[in-house]
Length: 112
Length: 112
Image 1 (cartoon, rainbow over the protein chains, first blue to last red):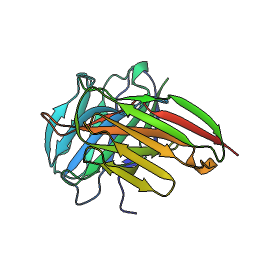
Image 2: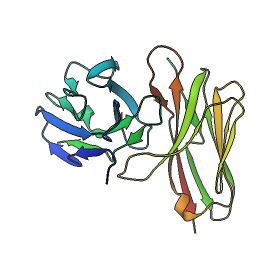
Image 3: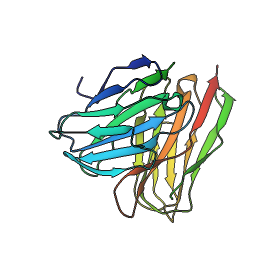
Image 4: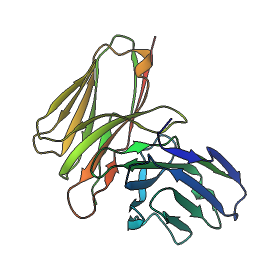
């Protein structure tokens, strides 16, 4: 399967802990996006990369959140000092230029 | 801030019925995409519409992009239980950074 891959699929952690998610995009795609989705709602844009450059960050992305794409391939999203409100599905998508984006199946984060 | 509102938010119908989902905004988008998402999975792209007034058909699904590229509709003919899911529209912004704004979602349930 050569689709977008996200790891882990599920993460349960205690409030205050740090978590890191990984996204492996489709190999030839130069753009990579992170979204957050709560139950029954549409995805909310968090940030996106073109190659290794982070071009935009949403105001939703507080200073506890950081994303990287060091070599322009896979990306990581880290949340420090997690809070209850961080519980959500974190989705990654990739695209080649202005072509439609393709999504991974997400990482579901639950904060105890 | 560009927003996309979808209606209805929830829809429960019997197999064989027709339905229309609307996606509206006061902003212009360079293109618009429709996705379907099932529980525990990422959104899957159904179609991209680019030109104002464009109509695309995908089997029993008909997609239309408004003339002014501010709104779109999805019409399903003779709905089937397999059409059940969360339908999302996503507009691509025309100004500044190229990114996607997702609609609020329409949760469809088709009863056998």
